[in-house]
Image (tube, rainbow, N blue to C red; front, side, top):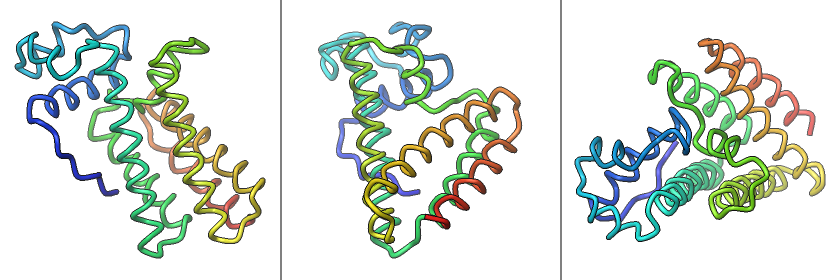
Length: 194
């Protein structure tokens, strides 16, 4: 899947990359600023220069960045004329490979932080909700372009996200990609039926 081109300061990018990886592994609350600063080899003042709101602002930026990458991948695939079933198969394969590559340590950033935030009314919880909504809307739009009725496209889009995120969690817990493979097959069958 393609990634959006980033035009950011190298220090900011390094902070985003390190924080994203740590949040994917352990969640928001279990990661401290000192660890982010040490692993990114960044002075504290630089963090506050790029993220004046500190750790919450950094986490929101990580969420926004992941969402932008996902939306870009959806847009690229849709614009290239690919069908959504092919996209789902690619997503399943890449997700499985990524879980194995990270030795099952990294989870979906949105899911990990979203589970921690629960029903909170924080800016961080809002960022996760907005990211999921944007991805869901983009999937629904693509499904509609493939001829699926509006209400059904929205339902399928929500199901794709819920099933894929759940499969990632289960695969991570089991240390086995079978849940992702099975879920991908089931999602493709659902989309085929429309």
